Length: 183
Image (tube, rainbow, N blue to C red):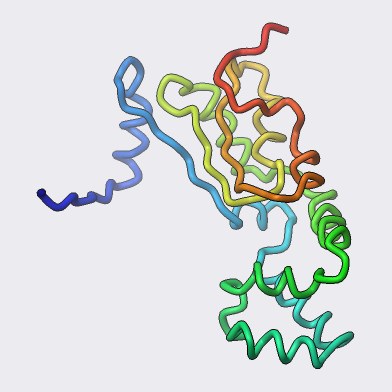
């Protein structure tokens, strides 16, 4: 079986490909991550994990040191250990972790990049109708739904969560379908 190769397109060629794909079978998908949320006022996972680890060191240093040793947490690469640190920090009260995250997101609003994304999704719905995000906030949805000329509901794939409170905090109007609402 031949090996698949990937090509890197210059940005100008990608933009032109998206602009000219109307009627074409080519589809594009945006994948966004923490950088989009950081520019909108939400701390990065590294910043959050650092705060949580410092909290544990201050309030339960013995547990923090055991966690660091057991999980082989490298403090110079703390972002990679985000889930383990979160779980350790909020081990006694999971609800406290959910509340902490909700508070971290409550004053955030979509940055300029989110609104550009919303307009691209609205204008190029033939070619781009899917967004995959690693973010647990609803900033993508917050930017998309006020766009007056959007004629369909783009699919937005958030990260899976076992937290019903965070899931409930996402926009209730996200139904993960591409049918326009008949308002």
